[in-house]
Amino acid sequence: MTAPALILMVLFILVIWGGLVSSVLLLNNTRDETTGELGTAPGTDDESLMRENTYA
Image (cartoon, rainbow, N blue to C red; front, side):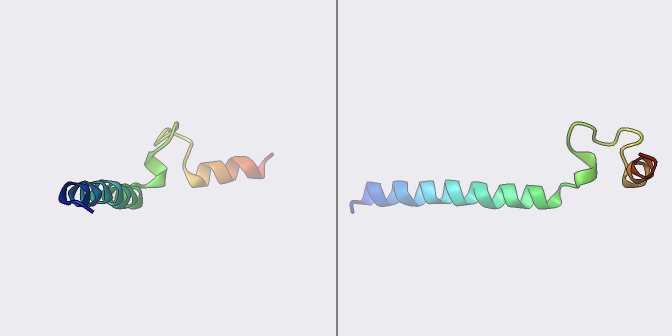
């Protein structure tokens, strides 16, 4: 392989694996309770939802 091909291969390997590592770290540090459509809306915590399901 030529030098430019090796440089590009290393560059793209770093970009792809770096993106994977950064996304895994960000997902690991994000709390499930504060994300999504409802986020921290009132009545969406675990206790409220469990109470609501017991009456159904």
